[in-house]
Every structure is written in C-alpha cells, then in structure tokens.
Length: 375
Figure 1 (cartoon, rainbow, N blue to C red):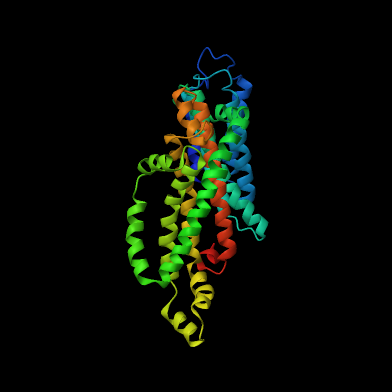
Figure 2: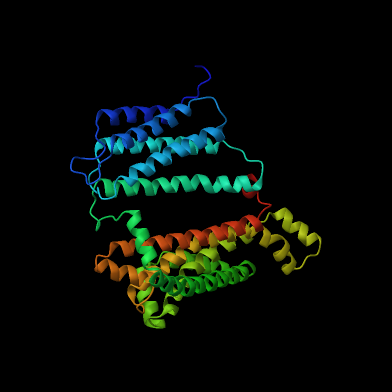
C-alpha cells in the first residue's frame, strides 16, 4: 500500500462515480435513445479502472496515458449518448462527466511532471497540455448546453458552431480577407513601424520625448467607439478607415514601449560605447536596440490583440457588406447566434495564431534574454 500513488482527483472521481451509481439512470425517462445497461456499465468500468490504475506505481508517462484514454474515452461515449436526447441528462450523467474531467485534470498534472530530453518532445508537450485543457472546455460546454437543454439562442453548443463554420467557409473567408488581411495587417504594420520610428527620434530629441509620451498616454485612453465613427467619416466605409483605427491603437503602445526599451541599457554600457568612439548609430544598433528588443516584442504582442479588436469594433460603425464586425452586428440582429459564435471563433483563432507567430519570433530574436533562456 505504501507504494500506491493516491491523488485527490482520482479519489474524488471514484466518489463521483459512486454518487452517479446511486442516482441512476444517466438519461431521464422518455429519452429517444436511452443508455443501455451494457453501455452504462462500460462507461463506469472505464472511469473506475482508469482511476484505480492511476494509483499504481508507474512512470508519469504511463499514468498520463492511462488517464488520457480513460477520461476521453468515457467522455466521448457520454457525449455520443446526447444525440437526439437534448435536455435529458440527469444528475448521474453530470456526476460521471465530472469524474472524467477530474481524471483529465490528473492527466495534465502528470504530463506537467515530464521532462523530455529532445526539442521535439518539449514542443509536443507544450502543445499537448493546453490542447487537453482547451478540449475539456469544449466538452463541458457541449455537455452543459445539450445535456441541460440550454436554449440555442442563449448559448449554442460547440458542435453547432463547428457545423456553421464548415457550412459558411466562403462567407467567413471573405470576412477574414476584409478584416484581417486588409484592415488589421496594414494598420498593424503601419502603426508599429511609425511608432518605432518616432520612438527612435524621441530617444535622440529630448523635447520630443517629453512632449509625445504624455500625449501618448492620453490618446491610449481614447475609446474606440469615439474614434471609429470619426475615422469612417474621414476615410470612408471601406477598410482604410478601419486600418486608421488600428494605426491609432497600435502607434502609442509601440512608442511608449520602444522609448522605455531604448533607455533600458545601463550607463556603464553606454560609457563603454563612448570609450570605443562609437557613433550614435552604432550605439543604437549594437547596444540600445538589442536591449530594447524585449520591450519592442512586448508592444508587438499587445498590439496583436488591440489591432484585431479595433478593426472588428470599427466595422460596427460603417463598412461594406463584408467583414467580421459587420457580420457579427447583422447576424445578431437576425438571431443567428451560431454565425456570431463562428465569427468569434475565427477571430480568436486568428488572434492566437498572430500572437503565436510573434512569440516564436521573440524567442528567435531575444534568445539571449534570461526570460527566454529560463523558459
């Protein structure tokens, strides 16, 4: 017994299984396709076996594999039983599902203990852990909306959102081209580059730095809903007005962070550059810019989310009949909430990819920084 490895997740999962067994059935009476005794017994067996096997002495990788198979296999069977039985899930059903969730939690805990020796293994583990976490958000969302019978107009299940995405790929593709590839990318590039260029000038010119930074703090506090209509009046209803909003939103975060980064180099390093008779441009390129890179990438990551938010919100105030913001505002008026959530999902996916690209670029450029070496 002293060699067994107990966990509170596994023990609680067993207790939930016992409670579910007492409060059977898993689906209410009148279900179109009720759980057969054999299927229900198989789900209980999988959950209990996975929990008990996780207590046995074994390497974390084996334990995580057992927990992964048990948790996700039982969860898949439980979700499959909801087809045609929306709103029929009972207390026992949710208790059993929570047992699966606890096993998945223990699985992630065991995966976190692993120390892969290869770069591929480290990368795969860094992707697997958040993937399991995100998958269980979708599993619980799906079970809650379909099993508890939550009205579709309040919160559609992920399966319905996925079906809408697959059925509306041409429309979503046109919206992505209009909002992301035109307004967001162009505004992001122009805003960040102009903010960086002005920051380099402000680092050289004292009165420019003292005059611009307070204005930057003020402009950063301007609400999007106040700026967007003005930009639409100035630049029209097409994407240039949305790009202008993105430029305003990304310019000053880049300016403030770059100015702070250019001042981050120590006085001893600057004195050393002067000792070597370095010119101002040599000092900038070989000392100040490398020291400012963590600050610059911090601004790029902040702006990656601000740009997407700014462009979508700006489309609420005037746009052609295409664009993510336009689609959200019109479809919610028609009560097509699945299409609204489809646009939200695509925006979240695009924002995550954008942020991930910048984060990977940061690791490649600032590999020397302690925060990167430690990670």
